[in-house]
Image (cartoon, rainbow, N blue to C red):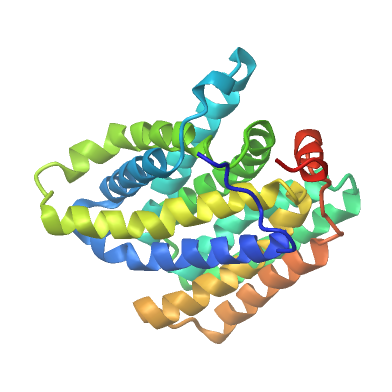
Amino acid sequence: MTPLRLPAGMPPWLLAVAAMASVQLGSALSVGLIGEVGTAGTAWLRLSMGAVIFLLIARPPLRSVRRADVPALVGLGVTTGLVTVGFLSALERIPLGTAVAIEFLGPLSVAAIRSGNRRALVWPALALVGVVLLTEPWHGEVDLLGIAFAALAAVGWGVYIVLTQHVGDRFSGIGALSLTIPVAAATAAIVGIPQAIGHLDLGVLVTAAGLAVLLPVLPFALEMLALRRMTPTAFGTLMALEPAMGLVLGLIVLHQRPSVVQLAGILLVVLAGAAAQRGGRRALPEEQVLAAEHPG
């Protein structure tokens, strides 16, 4: 099977933006399935369907796996499973735009820390102010458990970016995802199967398969391809667009209307991410450079 490569001339940021749009649309459309099989059940079904799809379209690179690769592959799979369960659990309790803004603190922190500039740490702090405006704690209606789930997803998403880039550099195409997504599905299954059992029917399975294309199949493949050509700093800060996407899709799909203060919070989060951007295009890994210079 021919490895899937970044199309010639296509900017990696475009792949990253397409991945973000797919993530947010998949998240918004998952709300109905959450009502039927629960958050963990939805995570397990989506990841399981995604694992099947990846195994069908990408050959697992088992012969290329070295012992030193196993911790990163397993770590990426477990992290993906935890992020999926955590984010969907947050989505059940707090608005999509708020959940995405909190989750974005993870990638933004990675961007700031990896930039090597202490002054860059001001941007996660600014984004945190935006998150406070989004949650409006002074109203006394803060869902602390929902925020905790979103914070767990934030930590996991930061780890996910670093591990995805590492794994993507080791394996060509998207074959590695046929190894990591089954691990993610197994991780989510621990709490997902007990939650979903008894609620499964053909309609639920078809819905889960459709959602799996939007998330994880399409965005995870695009992210892995993009991160081969972008630094974690560039990718993490580009994700500043994601809270805005979450807000718009939350409004359109879920009819979640933010207040003026919450809109200001989203604006601060987006500005923090945009301000943190400092270049960030990576050189191709050595083996990809050689392949580009000597095609075929």
